[in-house]
Length: 111
Image 1 (cartoon, one colour):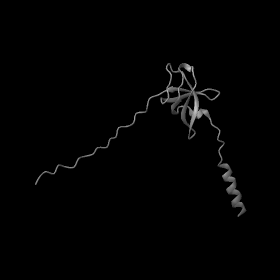
Image 2 (tube, helix red, strand yellow):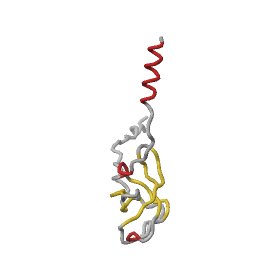
Image 3 (cartoon, one colour):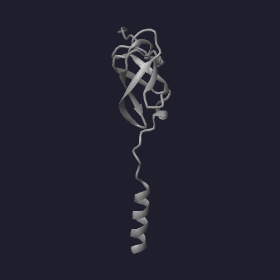
Image 4 (cartoon, one colour):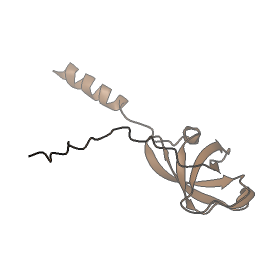
């Protein structure tokens, strides 16, 4: 019985996660601008992006020639050494058109 309990505690201890955020995991992630990002790295802003399974608000800069306003969709293209995301504006992915068709019932007008 003690062996089973010891094994159970051993394996439960291995289930823990460090919780350390690895910014490299954010590369190629799609997100949204939360605070306006200045053009050509002139002003740092914030973006909401999903990293390691959680939605995070992280600092970001952009090489874009125009500022990225709140609500714009972005893609993370790189990360600086101190953890600031470098983002670029992207467009909304095209959603597939529904291919299902529905037929109307036949017109029953015969008496």
